[in-house]
Length: 316
Picture 1 (cartoon, rainbow, N blue to C red):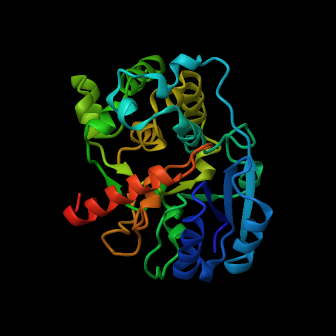
Picture 2 (cartoon, rainbow, N blue to C red):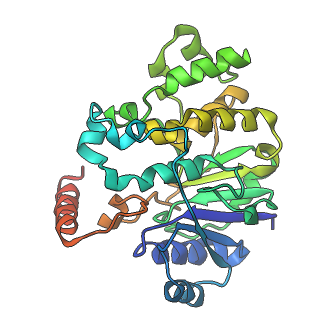
Picture 3 (spheres, rainbow, N blue to C red):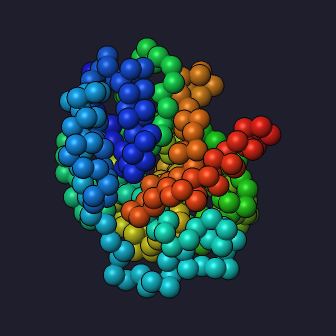
């Protein structure tokens, strides 16, 4: 057993019980690591929380957190107002603004107790695993996932490097930010692929890095809590506000930090290939992202259900 915990930010009321049941049934019943479910105000009530604890485990703790936009970011700079961006026009209306708060939450892995971030409850742990509320621990895992952290700073459930217009349009200005960061700090990336990308000023090569799952990441907090480079980098990320302005995610931002200071790829547990884990449930509910305001009304429910059926038929 390790001094470790699991945490997530949740708003999917229907999927959260499935996620937690699978987590405990197929892995955590053996280890009994505490699970912290964070949620934005009023998402979960006392009755719901009591039932989860009764049906699944008393090791699950629910923590309500507040959220706010940084004062230095203007409303017209927020991602959902960037109508020139195809992704915004087609898939990111203002009602999805909670997703931006979620991106801020998952990137700020050491901002204990700050608005919209993890609480001081997690400060005491050596290792933290972050999952999503639709993470699917689909088969028995017969080893301790935290064992990998004895010799690693950062591990993940699986890696990927797909690149499409969606990734391109949610990484706007990231390359520019990263190059300026390196120039200011007089740094060269230790990872060979990223170093080559910098030398050639080739953003496309950056996109081809192996990225972490995001929905199952494990952090060696003894490193992140005490590393001045990480704390400085995170401060610069927050000052720039790329999560709110351009919908930058933790996958890219934490990934770039890691590849700057470590040559080797993120440690890959390869759980999907081993058929132990899936990044979501086979449900239309996995198509709705965490939000502060989103509700699945009758209209968009049937649209999503229709799309989901077509997707299954044609395997898209």
